[in-house]
Image (tube, rainbow over the protein chains, first blue to last red):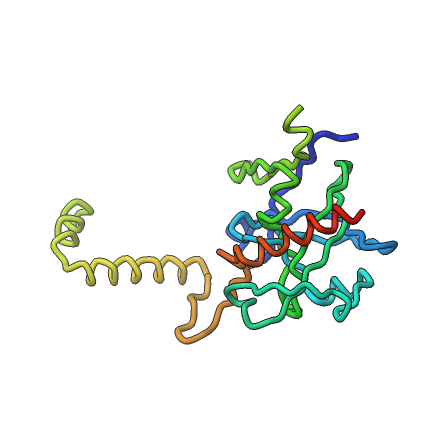
Length: 142
Length: 70
């Protein structure tokens, strides 16, 4: 099994080119028997992982069945959010349980934040080279 | 006027005028690069939930509870 996965910073707006590069990373989320490959934004400033409403629905989650509520901040403060725990897989790295604030907001990106993406994966950003590396915490401790 | 003379003059401006000068220069550069300036009064969403530590604590507790049950 791979120890490290490397990804490029992605140009998110061709009109701005280099200035718009962000650390978007492909990740597969699995909830119960359904899985979904999506792009997540690695956001070290975010206290939590955030899952947009539509993505939760695509995973088969039912809003009313997720009973633990959380209150987010900033633009997401006005939207209700509930806790949803899924299995996250990055490339060939071992999967990890990721806990998301599943928001009713729809226009938000999938955000991978401190709790708990960055607690499960160690990330090195090399913005000067437009790439970043991700490895599991167990690999980092070895 | 040379850059040295300009800087010397600019540094004698008030703090507010120096900030205004910087904003004008940035706006000029952005316009030259074809980057549209932010529109005054417009809302620009920032989705990052900074300092959502209460939510983070709740989520960690839910994760621990979930792990204990499985």
